[in-house]
Length: 608
Image (tube, rainbow, N blue to C red; front, side, top):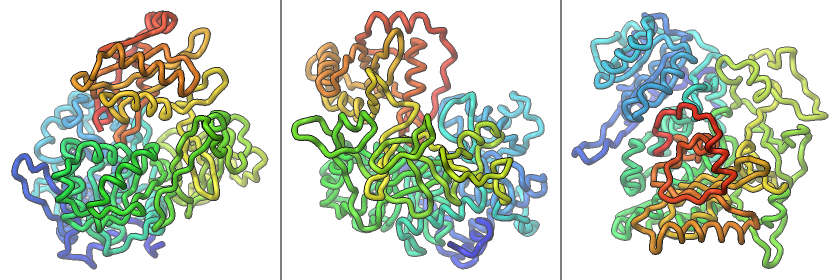
């Protein structure tokens, strides 16, 4: 832990100490012949003071400021300026990049009660027009790359405490009901210290990656962590990675990166799309911590990545499965340093009953990857209905306490009482009447909504509580069924399917799966039949509803999580166009009887 009271104090000190050393390097897409862009600590400090003076002059201290930028160094300058001004940064996805016509951003702007929008010159005209059209006449818009705006010499240090808000982290989800996680300076400092302890970073580390800057892992792990350390960060845009995953791995070798990562799908994409010729040019020997989180970690992906990139110097102990969320600022658990990812094979039938048990002979098994240990949190596994604590080896909802846990969602007191201030049945409680201690932090437990179990002191995350599929009294995890579906044919996209249940007089399983028609060796009828047959054999349940869809149909969050709840909603509204489908008559009637609602706008969440 540092001796700093706020993250602003820390960044000011780091900037003074590093001066002309690079704080960040950004690699634009090389399709335009671009060269790396460098930002020194001194230049970042100077620009942050200039922009902060503009914010201070407009009374933005302790008020919310929306940040809308393409991936690049301007975002980092603007976020740091908010810290310097004592303003509350609200990072958001740039609508021009998303094709979503400001729908999600309008909801965030209203909910956050932002007093200003910061962007760049290229996007300022469209954003100003949007503000005018939406009636946000009192919300100023600044193109921060205009050097004439603000005066670094007029900046003054803000009055802040550890309880002061640093930023609002809006979570992925519905465009109509955005929820902003309230992250204080104290939360941020606590979690950055937890990250450092967990992965062993230092001022000599080189951190970075490609995740969106408005995503919690991209912001806190790839931008704010190098600032915290006084280290160098190296970054690229999400679409650069998605077009050519090789560039991410090449960047790691070129800059001697030690720390960075992404969701499981990113590692799977590298395995599938990096060619043998590209592999020969890679050097991954500097990579000591390849964080793998934000979605369930797949054992087969870990094994395949380790094997594929061993010739490039990647070591199995560098793979770092971890668990965290925006509500805890970021990191909660991670595997012990220097240990390879631990895979636990368990009996599939026992898992469906909510227990971790050793495999039995020829019976079906499931492979779970450990998310590691909690160093800076109290962690409990709790029955979500009775709220009684579960013993080790039994699955329940993951509940947490710690200095990194946020005070709640912005302007959601009722939700915060339920989610951020829960009590374990038979626990000691210890709450004030308002559920908070004198520092404004909740004194109860955070309900994560995730399911998991503790085994030998390590956390195994098994799925999401709301996405659990219950058929004939059995608990099925959708990701297990999705993996089974994708194993039946090479034309089916890995990590590109959604399984959920719908109800008539009974529960029906629905599997939506992306397929590359040109890669199908037989025909789509045969592919669907094989899926039905394999699910029936593997899980002993009927699979009467299979939809094969075009690539890009299955919606995902910015971190790569399948949006199963959204896919279920779209399916019931008849909003899924299939290349080929098999539906039970009762399910067809259910779709026909469902009143359609406007579908959420397309976002990067459906691409990344």
